[in-house]
Image (cartoon, rainbow, N blue to C red; front, side, top):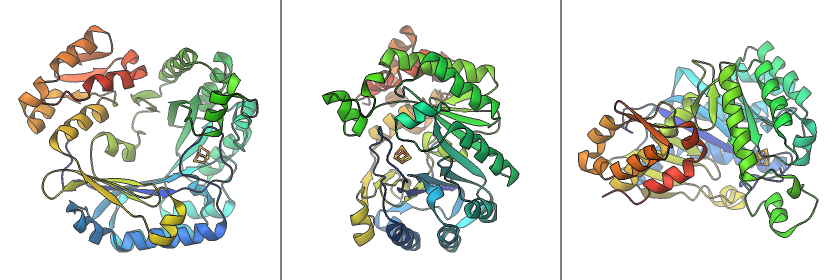
Length: 397
Ligand code: SF4
């Protein structure tokens, strides 16, 4: 479980370019011109060439062997094949990429060009994550998404024809105008599409997004008044857990569901505190420190700064107590839970004993279960995970 220098590396590559901005989104992504994307790729390549030097400066261990690569966004499917080729060439020049590496590319339905689709298998891309959010076209359109449910199904078929079976569909519970019945339509379509992986997120509207501002100040443009309330969103989430489980797509993390054997290996690295290197604007890294303390590193979230001055990384050493807190927060996200004996081995019995009262209270409140030596969240605990995590804050001795 613990982050050590012998783990293989996960690489996250941020592509913060989108064709349109969704109303609820306040990520650092945006609609930027093609010339900036070209420049961005050059910067990414330069970042890869200097990764080892930077890791030295952070006193961090950068594993040479890579076994997962994840292109996130934004909309990485906007990359041209030549741009992807430059990125993969730089990866090969600087890392030893394992033969069975899981390589995921996030993709907006309806925005997968034939040329890119043809090139994906050649580059070894073997997993696609579709930002569908809803199969109900009016719901998708209400938040500014450009695709239809039919386009998503067509793209899934195109990918299969190209030999890519490992496909994820993202769904969002809490979109404006969403109802229990319309949510079932999205779940049914996702299941009927036969994809082996589904992610379900509960909409949390950022106050600084256009939808968030409208919810605060009123207006009609972004359908703020049609956003379901928290209780309705919770019900949608629970309905998804049940419906997907009944279809054999088991929950393995708060937001992630997969048929057996199709879990995302890259995301598992985050929850298991294994090392990953983030490249690009607003990308984050977690590497093991040479002094035994993990390093968390964040890059600028300003595209102009990134293009003109580079990632401007900020590195932070994670002390023992913060590491222990992270171990709880990240490990409990997984349905498999956290092995308390492993935690004791890593952090000492005293450190874990301090959490006993919080554990007992969570068990009493039905938020957590302890089975043998493993602590895990109940369905209710996964729904209110933020509340559970708050109880674990500041407990470390
Ligand atoms: S596609 Fe994703 S990153 Fe881009 S605006 Fe929409 S939610 Fe944000």
